[in-house]
Image (cartoon, rainbow, N blue to C red):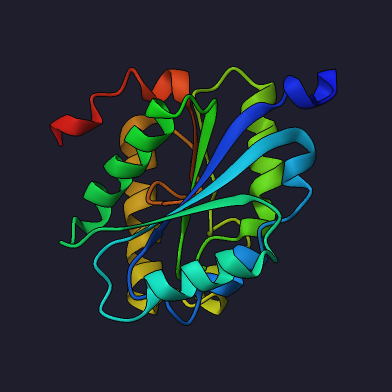
Length: 193
């Protein structure tokens, strides 16, 4: 039986959407800071979306080595569900398994796992239902991280337009680096889209 502090930890699912990420998935897993486990009961869920490479096998291999200090569950979609379909599967998993929070990462490493402790603590402390990471707050860091120039420019233009239309001040509307409070996620009819 654990201590009181261990029993009170909120449950965080780190959900990694993966498609043809054989070359990057291990690095993404290794970059998840172990200290996330100091504050949360962490599980990692990888859903391989019918990759044409060995993403599933590589994920299973890393899991078997035991070098990642968290429980890892690896699932495989035999038919590609697309980015949105894969997200829905992960969200349902988080809800069904009674997690408190879910963090969405990409298997290609475009979102920094190193930021998980900060983003998760902001979500836990605040009253928000979601926290979004941004690749655009640090100048051209997104380009250095592998974002194609046309996507970088398009993202900047669309974000400026959407900020103007909505009267908001977000640095990036189109970030896939998202953390949700499960109680808020349950209220979103994400299956309708």
